[in-house]
Image 1: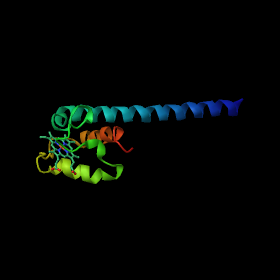
Image 2: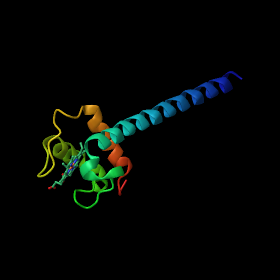
Image 3: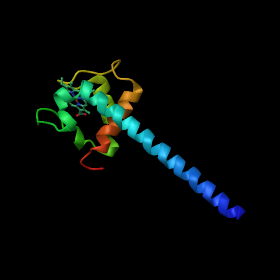
Image 4: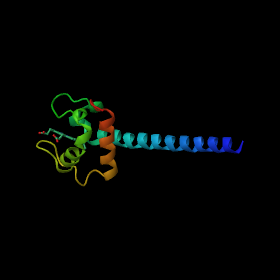
Length: 105
Ligand code: HEC
C-alpha cells in the first residue's frame, strides 16, 4: 500500500512537472508571436507567411539560431537592426515561435 501511494505521488509530481514545462513553452511562443506581430509581420507577413518580398522565416533550420540572432541583432541589407529594441526574452520567443512553425522541424 505504501509503495502504491509513493508511485502515485511520483506520477503526480512528474505530471505536474510536464504540465509546467508545456505551459512555459506556450508562454514563450506566445510572447514570440506577439513580438513578431509588433515588429516583424509588416515585412515578413502575417503568421510568418512571407509574400515573397522578404526572407521566409519558416525556412530557418534548427541549426541556424546563430544566423538568426546575428541578422536580427545587426540587421541585413533592407532589414533594420533590432539591437536595443528586443529583450533577450523576446528574441528567444521569436526564435521559438518561428521554430514551432518551421517548414522543417
Ligand atoms: C522593414 C522590413 C523588415 C522588418 C520590419 C523585419 N525584417 Fe527581417 N528581413 C527583411 C528583409 C528585406 C530581409 C532580407 C535581407 C537580405 O537577405 O537581403 C530580412 C531577413 C530576415 C532574416 C534572415 C536573415 C538572413 O540571415 O538571411 C531574419 C532571420 C529576419 N529577417 C528576422 C526578422 C525579425 C525577427 C523581425 C522582427 C523583429 C524582422 N525580421 C523584421 C525585412 C524586414
